Image (tube, rainbow, N blue to C red; front, side):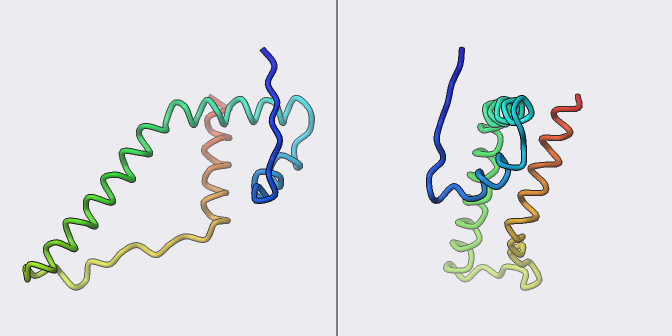
Length: 97
């Protein structure tokens, strides 16, 4: 099967990565990225759901007057570049298996 797609104006990150690759390298990256997404989507969704549940529980505890440790802080958001590098490393590790 052969598939194709077009990026949108808002897909600057996708364009940046795909334009750095050529021919079969680009096709392989897209194929492996989709495989990774399909394989781990449910796990990532579950993690995100758990984080939301934890935040909601903490909020409920605070509203009900139950003390929550003050030194427990929400993790700082990582810059998008770090997340992109992590994804690239994960994809590289995945491709090298």
